[in-house]
Length: 174
Picture: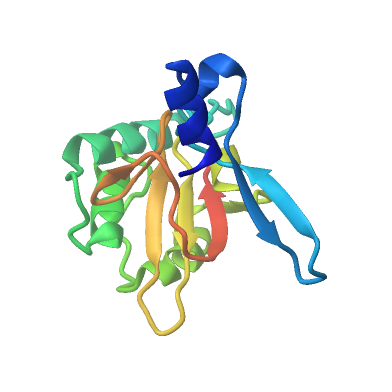
């Protein structure tokens, strides 16, 4: 029977009401007996992700592309991120022709070379302005591309968090 069980049955109260925090006792590698508090509840505070900011230097058509992509996105990935981002960029008028590259990881180079985009000096996806295009790589894979929205990221699906792949770059048009 543990000490906390004894305290509960002896006093008829919960350990919390006695200011008693259960401890996990163990020996460290030097043989010294140490203890640590036992975590018995989850964090009650909800995680809040930062919302994106509107950068007046970014072309408003990119913000429209973010809205279009969000309207067309699915709940889960269809493995067609670059296709959906291309369609949103074209529908918003951010690009004047449909990008031709097949792989998502090639998107940044094509947007800079053929459509007047610039690579922004941003390494944190959460710091990307609304409407910017984020391009990711993955060794041996097609990569991933998404557009930053006010509350998250969108491609063929929406997400509150950015991709976990390595970020190649954040691209926008002035």
